[in-house]
Image (tube, rainbow, N blue to C red):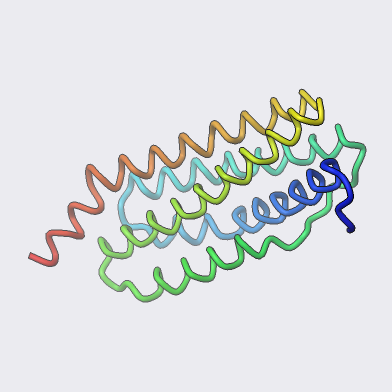
Length: 166
């Protein structure tokens, strides 16, 4: 797709996010299963439910744009997931693995926060207010997921992993 307008770029980025979210729907159950901390597992399972809703919201955005819901390979998410798999697979100690899972999940969240903030702004600039509202809703949920992961890391997981080095 040749990008000749902000609308073209908007559609391209929505397709990229659609691919990223669908990849996460497949990856989050594996991450949750690998987690040993109950709070972390619960947070990942909750975010999986939200991520499925994010896919549905993106499909609604496609409908608003009168575009077919279609993925465009998200190379950024590919890299983040590949790196996450390497780090998580390298950690045998459960508390260290949980810390690695949180780090990987937060990299995903930060990528999504940047991407959703960008497409929300495109929608606003294009005057597509319903799409902007849907994208803002997802952006809010991504931010909350990141805060929840930070809280789990700070009050439990990272502290436990740090004691291993003592």
